[in-house]
Length: 268
Picture (tube, rainbow, N blue to C red):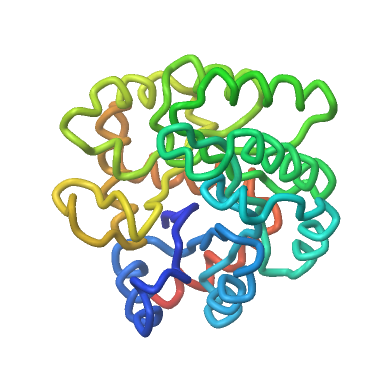
């Protein structure tokens, strides 16, 4: 079965639909999902979704869009929240110079804080990077020299240089519905060439629904559509991509018990 490594099930787009949403995901072969935190101060809502459903796990962190409003939250406070058994990742944090909704210095500072949490806890850092390839690579290389930490470049849509830098630093790369878009030839070329053992898939739901659902609300079931395009892009069998990306997920998200996927599979 597949894993949706990044979605936002606490968003109001899914209010009252979680049971049906998870059922549709299972029917599509998506057994687990990680709902991602965008504000530490709204973490209780994220955690509540994960606690209510055995197929759902979560992260804790501050999105770069919100780095300004949550500037100064100490790494120790975020790390303390990761002690909950359902919290399996840190973030999402990073740099977004496309929208620039927070001061860039706050984004950089927030990213470094989350890196410190990932380094301390051993949980993977979920990295958001948009139009900030040069600064992102520089910070990642500098911070890796200060001590290794697990991480993935989520919803990858950056350039080949950042992808290769991430691989060089031991990171994973996750692809979303963007991979399926007609004008994503360059991105598919990157996905084709990366090592198989570093690939993950996700939805970033409710955003970025893959073809042919583009423009509509995205949901975890649609992970299978992105996986199918990834398989076609790499010239391998769909079931091989499912097995590989799920194996990669458990290698990176070490805190998620493999029994959770087996339990979800048994319900299908």
